[in-house]
Amino acid sequence: MNDEARGSGGLDSRDRSRRSPWGRRSAYGIPRRDSAGGPPRWATYAALDLGTNNCRLLVARPTHDGFRVVDAFSRIIRLGEGVSASGRISDAAITRAVEALSICRDKMTNRGVTRARLIATEACRAADNGLEFRTRIAEEVGLELEIVDRETEAGLAASGCTPLIDPDAEGVVLFDIGGGSSELVRLGRPVACGRGPPLPEIKAWISLPVGVVTLAERHGGHVVTPELYEIMIEEVAALLARFVAEQGSTSVDRIHLLGTSGTVTTIAGVHLELKRYDRRRVDGCWMNADQVTQVIDRLLAMTYEERVANACIGSERADLVLAGCAILDAIRRAFPCRRLRVADRGLREGMLVQLMREDGAWGGASA
Image 1 (cartoon, rainbow, N blue to C red):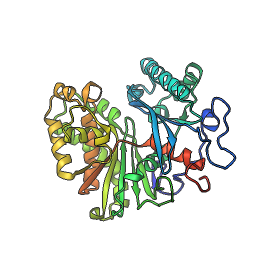
Image 2: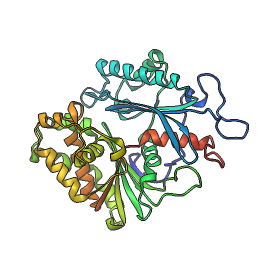
Image 3: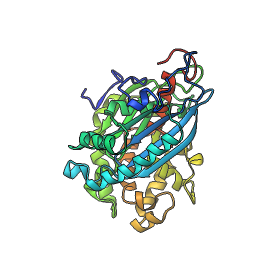
Image 4: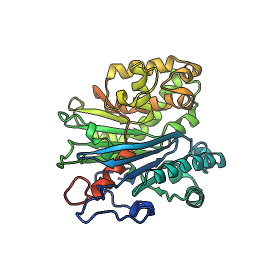
């Protein structure tokens, strides 16, 4: 198999790839561990995910069996806007990224972060000036981004979302619909490890070179007819075909879908009729197949202006949400599970779990 679809092979949920200098040691020279082998009492961790569409940060401290978020940041910056056509990250997108990342830097400094991992994904992988952008961020903002490959991205999503797997299910098909790429991971039952979040059992994965930004730029996102919507589904289905042939033999009655992305959290918010997005109600909520279909049909019937007016969509997502729905529908046709669990968590949580586990935050040998 190529490097975009394979069995678990080299995909290690305890990724050991190179960390940013901030991640190896705090900005103030505080060692990673205390004399007892675990992280210092005051250890504060940060995870930053710079994606094609969003810039997201979480700052957290370990607890007995997980972590407590002490600060967060999320902003839509559309870093990958136009990259599929021009091959470059635009000056305007770089300006937006510098502004957002400067806020993240200040939050990490103010919270006394002692270890961090700062990653960039598909936009930086795909752009001809991705490395140039990374250098500019280091010089202007003082943050060293790690441009991760798709395998690492899939593994981080699995680590972050594993706690939401139904313990009675035989596994899940996890999907992360991004701005420039979409990852699917076939997971078995999670592996309990005493204290701390469970470890994912990764059976196979695939990364599709398509996300909400690239699909919407190719087909349009303001006016989406049923015919155009079907064309988008078929495009994604063709990319999924081999993975489905290899993984589709599993009975869908014994597994469920687990989705992490702005697409599925938006669908959940619309389903719940939220007047304002509420992560506490969305993260972990269940939807059956009919409920998902009803929301997608409702979104397809809306005008662009009606999507903008919806509190769970807004102007920043109104032209992207139907492209995301098309990717989701291609996944649902490939794996027609009766249930979908929605995750408002993903790469950032995966990074935090891995960093804390490596530091022995929950006891035992570091991984």
